[in-house]
Length: 228
Length: 228
Image (cartoon, rainbow over all chains, first blue to last red):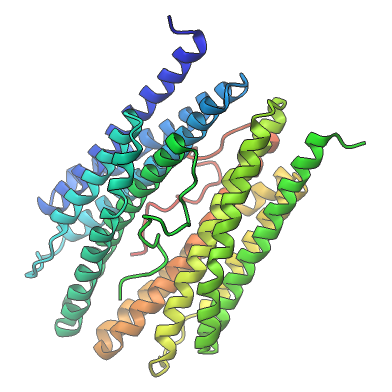
């Protein structure tokens, strides 16, 4: 039978998963607003960000209440990791809101005649986020580790998009505003992949009690190098 | 007399302050590298970022060891806040490294004939960071609250710089690359101010056990709205 403490712990996990599904939906809808030039959807994504923000506060409250009950070392790590994951999800929500802002701006201007594969990048970033959360649910450090190098793919797509846009700006200065908006979107997606990577690193830490942040083992250079 | 636990707690605080001084130095030197076109200094900032990264891991280790000793609720909050502050400082270090990267790139190109007040923005952001850390040391929620609205000043400087640069890009497309570099620097400084604001919010939470994140009370719109 579950103790009261275990029950609270699984409530915490459940809340985190609900939060994750809100964050994923926000990103998906922000990209949809961008590709469909749907201003109304962009507005709704921005408005819904408060729901995700609220989740972060609630997860922290639950975590602190649980910590105060002096759990075992394993549970302690689980609670800490839950808080860190929630912080990353909150930032994913912020990035979605940022994308939605740019989608709104872009929907008010003529479409750019330029092919940059934002939807592909969004797909990759969302896949990473989903795998990271799955690895948390299944407490699967192997899956979490496998995901980490994929951050490089997204980084490289971001660099490619950045170069294409910078080149286009030089050739058609009248598109500079729109290109800048797309650069911000691309950078946001790159950061969403970073957050997924952070979540995966926390899962490895949780399962193996080993801190792989900043060791260069599997982490894709974090956020230090900007696209050139 | 200090108990063993209190001793460890003040060690944790001391480590956080050392970390903060490294982060501040990194930002200051990155901006110096930018204004003096000093490639060597830019390289050293990037290299020293690993030291700040290492601090984050150490603070987390100390915090987890302390948490396991089942402290009082107040101490619990202090430990959690220490971890959150350390995370923000680590990100300040990342932003400094990013600025240093851009400083290196810019030092290899002719100087821009354009006045954007990056040093003023850097000064403001660093002042905010310093005040936030002071409010933590002195456990002074009034000072922490007073600091939060100053984030708006930095946001507004960033928007102003962004507009100036975007305009310059349109007028002189040959400067697009350099203007983009400066936009990244300006955005990094704006984020450093955001991290200072986060630290201040954690101090308010610590002292008043009140979570003011995402309430709109004093927070300057977080990171959602990009410069237009």
